[in-house]
Length: 466
Image 1: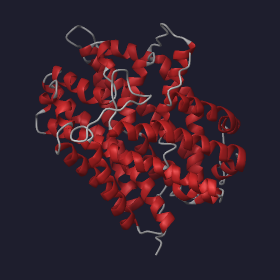
Image 2: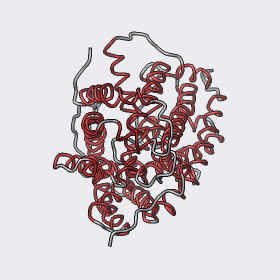
Image 3: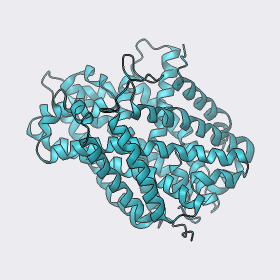
Image 4: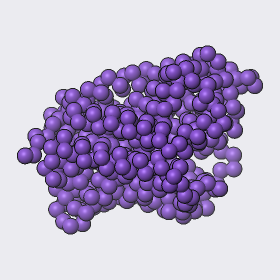
């Protein structure tokens, strides 16, 4: 028997849950690195412009599709346009979170391991030269921490929309925000051994660096900022459609989307304030060259150790904060898949959670083995020069760099050219709300967003601009 679809208790619950999805690992370690890599303040300006145009367009579109259809990503598109093409497109949209969950859980396990190390007063060991490499290449430990992380995620989803997703979001999101603000403020006050201060790092972060800027480099910055928005606001991975389907018809959709937009942009900015000044103060600008997992798992522990006794506490707070962020995001990823299985096959939440958790556990185990027993070297267009890709990198590339732009382009075509934008506009303003960026929205969904997405896809496929 098909379960009755739940709803968030109100717009606040929806906003906190959606913001929790947006504020994840990508925001905390990916945004600061990209800002440092792409000219500091210049990247921030480009990102902010894209957030209020491109990001807003995709976000309000997906939330509106969810509430209009009351369906998950797997079935929402076919309800809008019941043809073989759009039924297949729904499968593609659901495939994105399905591929992300296993490797996201593996990385969540890494965060859990570091939080555990600082909790048992072994934070100094994490700064060791080979600590991170030795951990992820161990045949069992990464699996153990990843399994605990995934089971915690599954437990939240098992409890449902109100008792699970909404309840944990109302608890963790305020705590998370306070921790980010506190660490960011402290980061500005520190002084490193070389005399560099947190304020010096803030200048690196905020002041635009136009040295050697070319058209090709600027297009690269736009591509990076556009790609970051996918991570940042959780679009093109089915999450916002699933969450939108739980939003009540009487709730103010436009205001809710605006709040998510503001909250997410604020946290992304504060993540840079939290991380970049500390690294510059203790390791100089060269310390920012360690990116991705390297920034969070290799560079930052060294910074915490150099801080002395306060670093032990700060390291614990930081990794607990990141663990909270990872959990709220993984919850939303799993919900996108679970809700799809429930809507498509009429499964109970219990059955859908159990089936998807088993699949994710097996796939997550394969991701962990990719760094030891199943190690191999592959090269992708996004792989850094001299680097190699493993199972995690391949799943990340296929889901984030290829499928997500394709899903977003398809959504733009469906809404902008087949259904027409009035469908979304009417849904967003069904209670008499004002659609303040209506004309911008029309231009973005029909013309500008598809072009930006096509550029992003071409860059991911190895095409060079300039």
